[in-house]
Amino acid sequence: MDAERISTAQACLNAAHHGSLSFPEIVGKLIAAGFEGYTVDYRRNTQAYYLPDGDSVMLDMPPSVGLVAAAFDATQVERLVRWAQANGPDYSYRSFCERARAAGCAGYLVSFLGRRVVYFGRTAETHIEHFPK
Image (tube, rainbow, N blue to C red; front, side, top):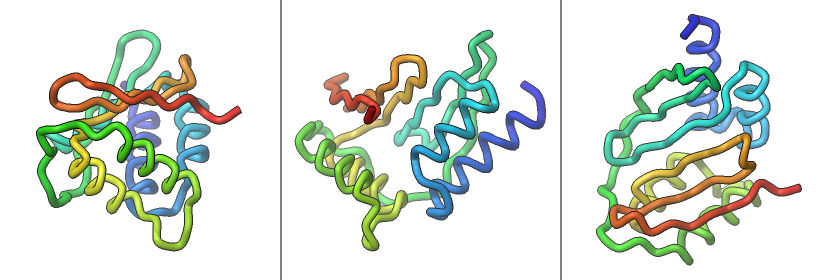
């Protein structure tokens, strides 16, 4: 993968954690750079970004507290997504990640092609969120 795309992915990861870009802004930048999606892995504390040709890059996320709970609470994950979408003054991506882990979310797959995010637990239970129209 070329250095410019890696730099874009890293900038988007940093912006999420610093709160300087919203999810829709990050998606727009990644699509413009040619990515078709990415995966967040809370157990490895990494994010992998994918190109249509099969190329990918894996980046480390900033350290975060909390382990992934054994039980997946889809209702709580859905509440967390609504909280993130509201983007209120109490929202931060760091807090979202910590609360998602506590709700048993082991990670999530963002598909730009499918316009959805699939949140998954350690037992492969899932919760699917479609991008707003």
